[in-house]
Amino acid sequence: DGGITQSPKYLFRKEGQNVTLSCEQNLNHDAMYWYRQDPGQGLRLIYYSQIVNDFQKGDIAEGYSVSREKKESFPLTVTSAQKNPTAFYLCASSISGGANEKLFFGSGTQLSVL
Amino acid sequence: DQQVKQNSPSLSVQEGRISILNCDYTNSMFDYFLWYKKYPAEGPTFLISISSIKDKNEDGRFTVFLNKSAKHLSLHIVPSQPGDSAVYFCAASPILTGGGNKLTFGTGTQLKVEL
Image 1 (tube, chains in turn green, purple):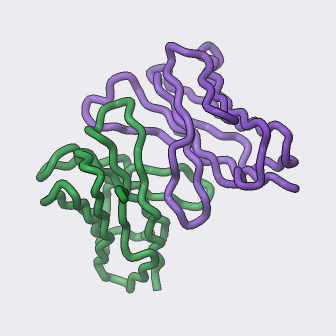
Image 2: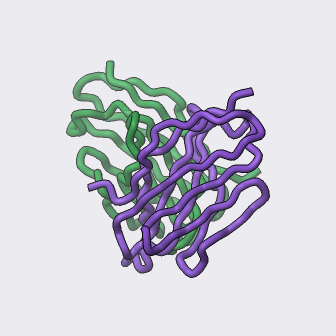
């Protein structure tokens, strides 16, 4: 069954701590994305990657970092520099990252600050 | 600057009636539009799309209408069913993104279909 797996489903971060959200896909898609959703707001793009070992900042990249060492995996690290990390984080993928492609989303990770 | 706007945060409709969800955009470079449906604690799933060369696209109970001159699109669901209760996001994409798929999402409309 092809899809996108995000883990964990819930994550808690202590003050000053870095946390990493996992995203794995077996759709053989080249492009992967991280979005953040806050209550009453649309999804906002954090980072995206169209190819292994390459990624670009989205609209709200500050306080976040990513890596793309494998085609299937695109982990997101929320660093201590992100002052308001509480949000619902969504990972997505698309075939090649072309302008008119639909995205396939994972089920999300809810990150909360202790 | 919200380039994609969904001005109705919520909508309540009776089962069997039509649901109409609206979306306005300001960027004239947008030429591809999508609707996503999202249940609580799940990721959005693609519902239907339309490109700017068309003014209507239909898929079963779902129809999307595009009015380019008004920069407005709408999603019609007929007939509405209780399982349609979800948050609906409108999204838009420009003709040339310069690399990568950069969708701009609206804030979403919570649809509730009542028995």
